[in-house]
Length: 115
Length: 111
Image 1 (cartoon, rainbow over the protein chains, first blue to last red):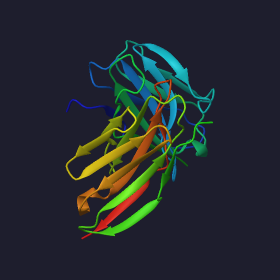
Image 2: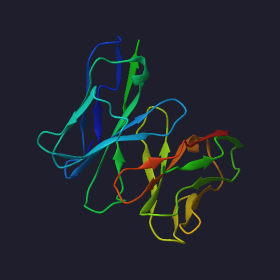
Image 3: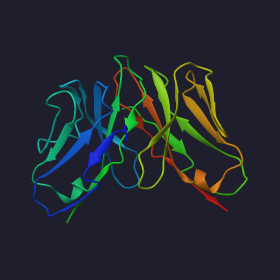
Image 4: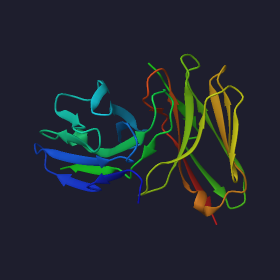
């Protein structure tokens, strides 16, 4: 499968624990995005990378959230000291190009449940 | 604040019915309008990316139109089938690369 993959697909954790998600984009794509979707809402932008540089972060991304893309390939999203409000679907997408508006290809998401 | 709105929120139709959804978006700083189909437990699937006012795109029984001057797009499904059941999301791209999504339209097609 040459699409975007995410791991794990599901994560249940207790409040206060740290969690880390991984995203593997389509191999030739230089851009990688993280979005979060909560119940009844559309996905909301969290952050994006061009190669290894993190170019934009949403105000939704509190200090407890950190994302990396160390070699411009896969990316990780870490949430420290999880809260119940962090329960959501975390989606990763990738795209190719330098112009705005390019098509983004999504992974299946990681569903996080914080108990 | 950039707002993307979709209507209706949900729709139940019979197999064979044709249906359409609306997406409204900011008409300023427009770069592209995206439509995605998202089935449960799967990745959101890109249907269309439209950039020019008056664009019309078609893929099988699904088509979409774009009006950037008034800030709306329509998605049409002709002869709905049960496998069309999904959430249909539209997303706006402005001067940055991030997608700004609407809340989606949940379509259920009854056999």
